Length: 268
Image (tube, rainbow, N blue to C red):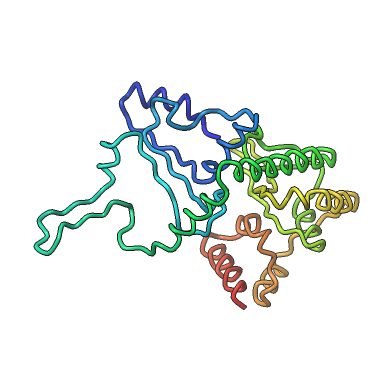
């Protein structure tokens, strides 16, 4: 998580509006806090924060298409609206970022939120937290470590003694799909594997760890063969989970074409 508290203090001092992108954590971190997890404040409890965005499909469990932008006060909300009173037909008002849009996703989001309520979100958040902790504990036993402090429902894990390309590919054989993330040398971030934990993972984490242990014990190392990759792309058999690593091996134009091939393959 970004140091929102410290940034908020600077924004307040300089009288600069501060927007917090809580699209991923906005519907789960507050419930983490309610069930006892330590969560650094990122919301309007910080005086410098002036607006917050959240996506309801991310841990709000609604269909995509409904998002929320909250403003600290009425005056800030006014600045987000477009009004044209000179229109000869009617007063033209856009109260949201988009103009005309279907109310369907909004109605769906409203229904889901009303159905789950605070109690439902608390339960689902507890499932996510239990799954995250179990996964982190189990993966540490297999030699994995977290790239950064664990603060949310996201895990990014690395293992210096393991070939992660081979690990991801081998886990695919057991039916597990997750992605590699590129390292960033400038910030000493190694190549890592990324998990976004959902409530269902509370049921599956044990099986995942058993399979991960089998793969780690195999200690395989997969050599990257560029000719083999090109042939895989042509035949539509490229492993999409390896895409972030593979694209680093090509010029940008070729990498973009590779990604297009992977996406097109989804429609076959």
